[in-house]
Image (cartoon, rainbow, N blue to C red; front, side):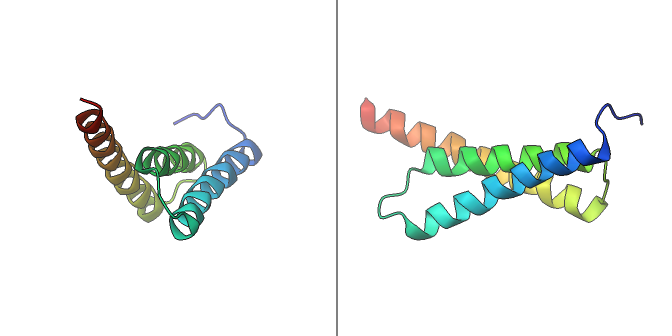
Length: 89
């Protein structure tokens, strides 16, 4: 598989993804009233960015972890959006 990203660019994207996930975790620990849409969206973006970086610097266990992380975040995001719509209706 040929990648259009350099290893350095992939690392920068991976660091951005790591920052997103850490920021979401910190937010979940300091927030008094957590916005579940924001929390899950930031986690989803972070895992997606890390997945992009893993296409260059491949590591199977980490790729599996990120796919699972994205799946959980997407399910949480869908649930949070549905709950917000229910409250608005």
